[in-house]
Image: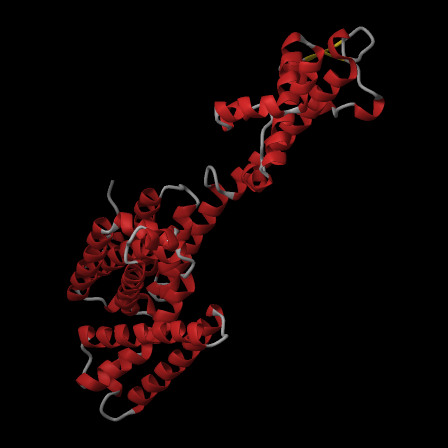
Amino acid sequence: MNWPASWWPNYNTLVVLAGTSVLGAGAGLAGCFAVLRRRALLGDALAHAGLPGICLGFLLWQERSLPVMLCGALVTGLLGVLVVSLLRRFTRIKEDAAIGIVLSVFFAAGTSLSRIIQTSTTGGSRAGLDSYTLGAAAGMRAQDVYLIAGVSAACLLLIVACYKEFKVVAFDPGFARVQGLPAVGLDLLLTALVAVMVVIGLPAVGVVLMAALLIIPAVSARFWTERLSRVLALSALMGAVIGSLGTALSSRFSLTPAGPVIVLVGTTVFLISMLAAPRRGVLALRLAQAAFARRFAEQGVLSRLLAADGEAGSRLDPGDRPTPATSRRLVAAQAVVYDAQGQLRLTDSGRRRAQQIVRGRRLWQQLFLNSPELAPLYADLDTESIDALLPPDLIRQLEAESPAADDRAEAE
């Protein structure tokens, strides 16, 4: 197939594609731990706090040097995180308010310094610092790609080397301290990991949008799996796809700068994940809830049929009659049949299922009487699946303690 010549990317586009892809993958990896530790907004604070560091790096070096300016951004970014930590520890200011204060103050300082530099007679034509607000991926050079790739590879190696320790600290810092792990040091290392990825992403997507590239892949990947290793891999893959596709669309159709397009592509990926993920997506949850409601209605009908007439052929009072849809499902499952009078009657298989439902409800009630703190863990309990959800020893204990066991003992 012959593609139009205008569709083939040139060298500069390939460089930008490579840079944004690697940046998206690295940001996706680092963002997973920020999201798991409920510090997603910390990346936003880091990005905004890095702007004055970029300006100070330019003033110190007196020319545009990306390594120097990014080192300045890293210093002021970590300073912003330190200020957030101090405000939270020594004042009554909550963390979200502290992040808002640092974000706004540092960004205002950076914007003021940038404007001073841009309007000065010596630096205005050489600084180009406005590009750090929304990013300028089109200006990325091969050396920038090497820097991003090297930092992303270092972050990946660090995560692989300290995977178990990072996992424990991310999910349960208290348990990490009990196990003798340096929880504070590991926490600072994770923060530094996020800070480094934020800083190297500033030239591509800017301080305003870097937090989105850090958070969106991680949050989107979380919809598709519950294992941390798979979340990390999927987040890195999504970050790479978001970065490359956003850059390609921006280059092909001459839209807005690549940074905003990358974030819009990430938003599309997030919406697809939120809606279509097989287990945690909105559609899957709605379907599961509808299936649970149908199953609950069927179980209610069967248990009422069993209580109404037991072995003699079950009939329901007019107020307990099921909906036509529930009746059709039970008839199709051969759990009930219609007798000559048009009343529902349990079949042998339906009676066995009804007895299992009644037994399951009785055992769940006994479990929650013994251990009410377990109730939130079984919010969507299934009375027919109790044997699959609870250990056999616990089932036997509940059987012995339930009221039905006392009734059987008295009958004997």
